[in-house]
Amino acid sequence: MSRLPVAAARLVGAVFLVSGMMKIFDGAHFATSVASYALSDETLTGTVALVLPGMEVAAGVCLMTRRHCAAGALAALALSLVFFSVLAWRIAQGDTADCGCLGENLKSSVPVSLARAGALGVLASYVFVHETYRAHAAPRGDGTFVSNDASV
Amino acid sequence: MSDAEIDGRPALRRHTSHACAVLAAGSLLGVFVNAISARPLPLVWRAHSDTSVASALPAGVTAATLEEFRFALATGRALAVDARYATMYAEGHVPGAVSLPHDATDAAWAKNRAQLEAAETLVVYCASANCDNAGSVARALLSRGCKDVRVFAGGWKLWRESGLPSEVSP
Image (cartoon, rainbow over all chains, first blue to last red; front, side, top):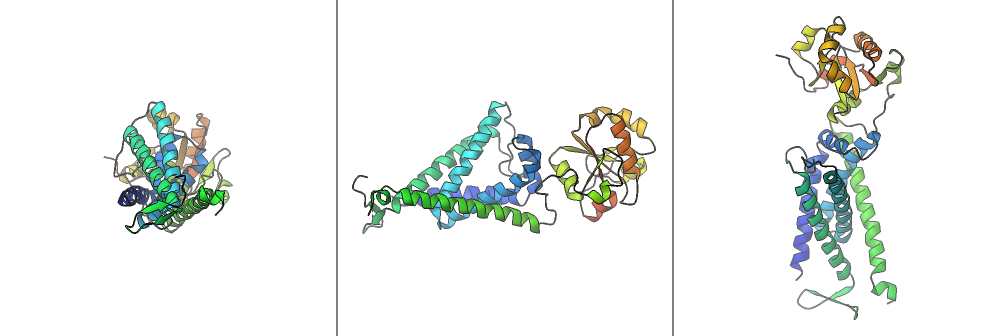
């Protein structure tokens, strides 16, 4: 029962950590990808290209280490929603080429990345709900949790 | 235990504030990694950052620093224009640069006109900070209707000294 949320947290954390690390050390390439979306004013392209991978890494570390896991899951959920929205917008524009989501070395088409962002968002939601619920539950003898709230 | 505590609202608020802190820490991490990298990207693209060079440029031409030049090329917003002699260009130039020698501007313009006119921004460079050919070629580009023309004052010398890649023409 309690292994599934841990596995989900580790999976989401690993994906965010790896994709963030691949982009954070190759800012110029990721800046190219950000610029191709033409979503923000060009003066902010560099800022977005530097800040987003850092956020991914921070959320990934929280989920992988399970320290501040709920906060990491919520951050991952927010990032997944942003990525999902941007990728959906890009598909609506008719562009389905490489999205630049995983850096220069790992190519990933926009539809595949959209599905991945959606799946990560669902998993992050699950981890977040579980972590929030667990905070209001008492441990049972078998290591699983039972809610203190009778209405649950 | 109050109703608010039972339904998890305090926990939600706490997790939300922690998530904001995680994202803020991640932002700082990204900025820090960029700051310590060998070739940091500019956080903000500025058109008039190098005022000491800009004062010596023709009217309408702005200066670009090395990092701005790199960033503009990396994001595909700019086309590099090599104002040196064609022989120097052939021996090595900024990857993707178009040769527009200061002594043969008209012929080179005719040959590369479509590419030059299609570029959002043109960044001209010559041999080093001591040459003024980039300025004269930039002026020629402005007179031909190019809107955003900048000069990379450090020139080919600074590009090479910074260990950046080069391209050799066949």
